[in-house]
Length: 470
Ligand code: BG6
Image (tube, rainbow, N blue to C red; front, side):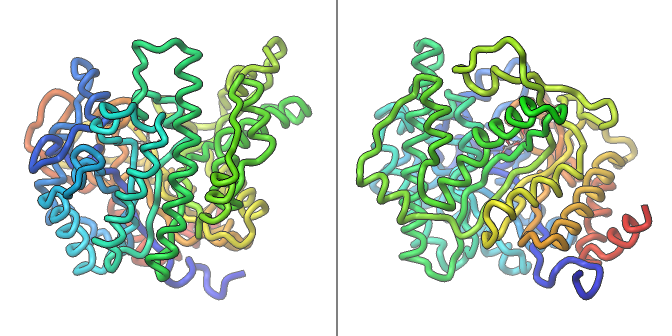
């Protein structure tokens, strides 16, 4: 038991966003085009794109002051690669982009907010796609390493926590984000190219881990991995195995590679079943071994309950072998993500069992819904319930022995949802705009903002006391 019923001293209470989802100014001050810009522009008739987004670029001070008032100890942001190097690998950086992040990092420092910086959150510079096809080419490895090297030199004294790549496993399902031409490739080619890109990202990430250790020995670096925890629909062994395999394929393989520095056999076999065979050079094996993570960044939203299908091709992807089941006892968002806080404790324990000495940082965790401003207020009770119950389960997990060091709910402010535009809101702060109208862009604190403010102020103790009574 902890001495007092509160979170450990120094716990990083934060919140998260990513560049293309909040910044806007997508074509201003020299920023280059990214795959995220292109992808959202294609959906412009149904949702907003990246061009203005919630205009964080022009609301920097105001937004950081809102973070300060909330009491945030940390802020997870991402740097847009194409704001620094418009084509991804230019000889000279874009000075205005470089200055923008200095300004943001300085504002955070002035307000005692620890930055947690993601280097690459879905937005690959189109320059690299046009030059050589993006991540499918090994040339992207060197370009990512050079970009990281620049970030370490430029911002190394201002940033202690670095995150390399956000949700690599999710990007494999968004091949256009990786620079793959989805219109002119067959399904089989897309699968092969996505896995090639995936492999190249593993190598690039390992090199950047090592570079960080060499250049910034006082900094810590890790990946940000999506961990939507699969739970078996029954205690039948076939469902247990299916849930395990889904977690292995989607999350643990990525964590094993980042933490242990080698591609696990179960993962090679799963890929092999899907016709993906690769030979690893001795050099790549060495690279993975030499560059490993200091902590695990985990994006956790919900569980997914899976049942093994009776009729399925055993050699197909594990996704095709399972059916997702809805639990009628759980609440679901309009987009079918459940509210299952005990699932988070279970997930954190699983991490602790597998990686006993590795600190864990929750880099995303949140509840989405449609919202309408009424009298300048947003009464987001379900988000409050989501925060309360998840934070309580985090506390119990810490008592279980999990080395959890940070919590960054998604998202600090309403963002451009990567799949559903502005209709799907996650923020603690509401932004007055919708998909087709920029409106006033005014910021409003939601009820959840005030709730989380008290959680931070009391270091979780009020919340724990309340939940202990249940
Ligand atoms: C994570 C991403 O996958 O989930 C975020 O890192 C994203 O960028 C979040 O916004 C929620 O997904 P969506 O599609 O609802 O925006």
